[in-house]
Image (cartoon, rainbow, N blue to C red; front, side, top):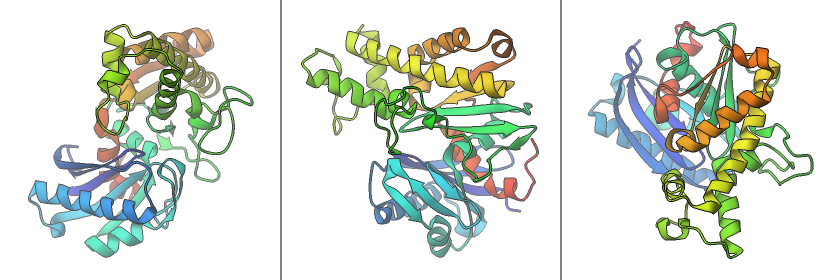
Length: 323
């Protein structure tokens, strides 16, 4: 097997592609493009363009690549390489494997984005050496990957890990999935952005208004800056989101009792206050004995967990990645 593969993190707001040495986890080159909510055709075009750019930046021939792996934000048909449903991308039944294999003439493997990030973390990140853990990523949505006795646990329908759809408020806010009260509707970056925007529209003052530059998107760095400036609106929204997120994580600890929880995503990486208060509240809400045996860490690979994990999909599916 050739040692270089393409890894693609197809998320709710960006496509991140890179050429990865699958023996060392080293990223040779990468490329990024924003996605937002686009049509399936637009995602297809942007996906191909981003992969092509990463290959060009690496100065490597397609014939030198072993495979292309894609971690997609949504529910996937792994066997057929289809993105079945990705509400945060407004995308359904996208035949990723077929589309990408046709263009690049190489093997293509598809997995859920957080599941794929979990593969990255257990192979080259902070999950190395653990047999039972949960990776939780907070982004456009909230998802998790579950490692049980050294193997990924996917559940009866292959959709295990949808922590973002734990109900934390019966009859509460409408979630993108169509239900009410999901964790994702309270603690995702999308939910936090909506909450801040809504409060500002009601006339409350916030430095966020002066920080916005690009499409009025409230980036993680703006939230961090606002907290540094003691912005009351942002402080209250982040505190509230952490309250809900900690409830979801405490439920995971009480139910599954993993050795380790790995947390990732833009807000977790960029906003220390959000991470710190979430962890503090998680320990107070979870059962004492269960919590005492569960470590909580940030990702070891930071924003590249999904990219590296996607590049490892061929090895993982051929049982050559040992956990």
